[in-house]
Image 1 (cartoon, helix red, strand yellow):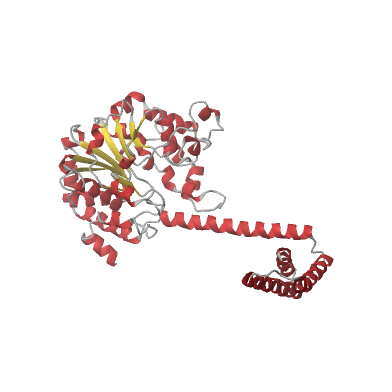
Image 2: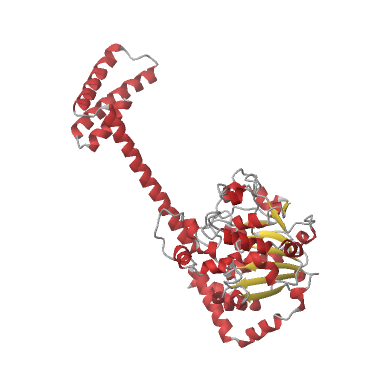
Amino acid sequence: MILAKVYVVIAKEHNNLHLAWQLSSKIRSCQLLLSKAAMTGEPVTLEEAEPIIKSLSFLMFKAQDIHYDIATTIVTMKSHIQALEERANAAIVQSTVFGQIAAEAVPKSLHCLNVKLMSDWLKMPSLQEFSDERKNSPRLVDNNLYHFCIFSDNVLATSVVVNSTVSNADHPKQLVFHIVTNGINYGAMQAWFLNNDFKGATIEVQNIEEFHWLNASYSPLYKQLLNPDSQTFYFGAYQDLNDEPKMRNPKYLSLLNHLRFYIPEIYPQLEKVVFLDDDLVVQKDLTPLFSLDLHGNVNGAVETCLEAFHRYYKYLNFSNSIISSRFDPQACAWAFGMNIFDLVAWRKANVTTRYHYWQEQNADGTLWKLGTLPPALLCFYGLTEPLDRRWHVLGLGYDLNIDNRLIESAAVIHFNGNMKPWLKLAIGRYKPLWDKYVNQSHPHLQGCVTS
């Protein structure tokens, strides 16, 4: 029967529909006979089986006579399977590309919000005056307060991070938020945070384009950004489906995304700071992070090697001797996105210099392929203090099966992955955790949702 089914496929492919029909008919007779035996519990008799076996054998000899031999059958089936695999792989790649495009796209409602806020910034000189006053606040450099930094071009996402942090803080007026955005979103970001109160917390917004010290002569990444090949690869159209679409996401080469390696330069007077990504929600008071003993280390982070694949060898090219001679491939990786940094220890260890060294070594992309985590694993090697995993729970942007108890116990939940909570791609189960910190009553948000 199994061989007959193979010949049915082959016969159809050679347009011999009559033979295919004959084989299918005999296969059905076999199936009926076996089904009857299974239902009655009685064995198939020779008298019942012999005619069917003979007729099937005759059809198989017939198939072989027209060159449907075993070798042809195997080759044809292999070709058939290979074609199906190629179609399946192409469909997977195409699906990933479309998913990546959807994840990178700015929803119309967010674009609308940015336009309205930018209009406020340009039409209201008082906002710009208020902003100038805030720049001189002594609270911005007061090390007795709790400092957080966020680098983002997404106004609403940044607002959720700030709002969720102050809403769950025991003393929100002691919190200071340092936000850096790009020139396009600077006015919108300023207008939003100047026009909204966040429980008395201090908030400053800076424009990365005013960091004149961050230039091609100082930053290897900045030099890479000026490279035409890099610009075409990251910011051009999706031309080559052989490249992993995730690798082409412009955020992986974004200067704003790599600004986390320059925190001591941006805030030279600060001693400790908590770095927060813009795709997370804070659920508990984070100020105890500042009193944790990092044992002389620079970075406090939650380790991610409970899963075997979250180790150094997963992120770095250990076939290159410059990596294999200095690092343990089984070393535990850790999460970027909620980190407590001791900036005094950072400056002492020259972590930014280390970052520059590794960026230069990886100019050809052979040591690692994308993102900020691989260079961070190199820069903070031996300088990272493991934190209790409840400080930072990851995966809400891709994992549908995170334990509710783990989410409830987490100080920070991170929507890392493509399914961001502000997109239609968001996982419905987790989206309310983010939505509750969005100021839905704001007239601009209501107007943009309606329009």
